[in-house]
Amino acid sequence: MRFKFSLSRWQFFAWVIGLLLITPLCFLLFESLQGDSEVFSHLWDTVLWDYTRNTLLLILGVGVVSCLIALPLGWLTAYCDFPGRRQFEWALMLPLAMPTYIIAYVYTDLFDYAGPVQIALRNWFGWQAPSDYWFFDIRTLPGAIMMIALVLYPYLYLIFKTALREQSFKLVQASQLMGHSPRHSFYKVSLPLSRGAIVAGLALISMEAMADFATVNYFAVSTLTTAVYDTWLGYYSLTAAAKISAIMLLILFLALTMERYSRRNQAVFERQSGVNSDTLYTLTGKSAWLATAFCFVVLFFAFVLPVAVLVGYAISYAEQAWNSAFFFYAWQSFKVAIIVSVVTIALSLLVVFYQRIAKQAYPLIPGRLASIGYALPGTVLAIAVLLPLTLLDDKLNTWLEPAGFSPGLLLSGTLFAIIFAYVVRFYAIAHGAVEASFMRISPSLDMASQSMGKSQAQTLRKVHIPLLRRGILTAALLVFIECMKELPAALLLRPFNFETLATHVFQYVSDEQLELASISALAIVLVGLVPLYFVNRSMEQRS
Figure 1 (spheres, helix red, strand yellow):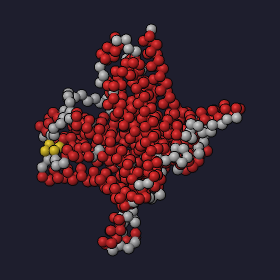
Figure 2: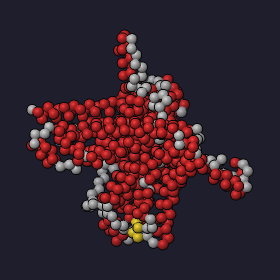
Figure 3: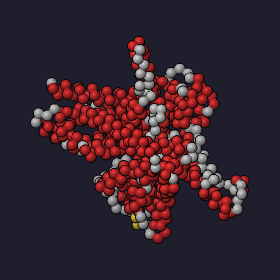
Figure 4: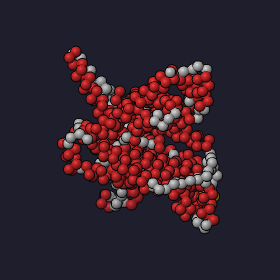
């Protein structure tokens, strides 16, 4: 009887968490189905189709450029031996630590008409005016595609490289025996076998590209993400913003559904144990140096050059950038990130422990519901969170008004809104890490604890949590990093006079003064390097 009561209690907590974190999405979908909005009708008749076209072109362009960069890099580092391969294998993941709007500003500053590159060209060739020569304009849609792809390609690179390592080398060797060159083996064997991994990487890149706000806003490229932001801050229409957000979710859903349908009848079966740590091809001479040069060029433009520019700014403008504002904004970012990390870890422990003790299929549902928020772009998530919070604020003020007390925007206008939004978005990260750690704990330990008369709560506290310390630390670290970098949700939900490091940097970027926030930008990059270090360590241990 005691066990049944305990199970129902864990079940209650798990379902409350799952339903609570899915609530913003439900409100968003409900609001998007409401009656016609004048603002949305105006956008529909004027610019919405242009915004949608730009969004689709952005996703397509970033996907194509990411493939052109990541697939050759993944194949080279997984299958080939060339000078510097060991170093490039982990270094090529470093651009993930670089926020897109920072790299966008750096290259705009370098390649703009008043930038050092064009000034040097005019001095060398004697050009006097823009009419004397042609130079590409970086602040365009193609420019935004290149900037975002330089930051996001490591998603595909990492997933594709791992998939190649887990494939059986015998298949590639068999293709060689049939007379295929390495290039033909790549197209006819490696790519088809890795299609699922490539799609998973492109899905992540598509979601991140669609969610990007700062880069496209800085480049004056109107997308659905900027439309959500402008509709809320410009027209104060939550209904119109919800309808645009629903269009973004529909695009993502249709893209994933179409791809899954296209490979419905395909299946791949392999016999492979462990991970291949050797290489298939040893490159020599010109081929070896071309491979090294390709890896170096990508790493240089995606990470080394932007960081070098930031370091130069930080040194030149140290007195202006290293001030009390930096420490204050860093503390505010740190405070929010710590709170969100603790909350997401606590919630994920409750949900995953319920999955463990229930041992049926349906206990997985609360965790899956709670994890959906990770797919929401930051601007969409902000609107989704505002809808229930403003409703609760309105009801609370109406209920307390007869008593002569009006709390105002107690939920939607305070730090609670940002924290709740971050928990909804980043819960999936904590859930995945904690769930993976739980799977490594033998069920016999649960049985031994039960046989000693310990309750399930005591088992979780005294047996599981000590064994989960590494997984919990990893999950908390990943959530912490994501909170420090998050920008769109913070811009829309922050209270008055509240800044994080990300919003602080973005404000200076918008004012063409990144130099004054260079130390803050470097802090975000350095914090973002921490999870990449742990990912690389984990991959080395598997090899």
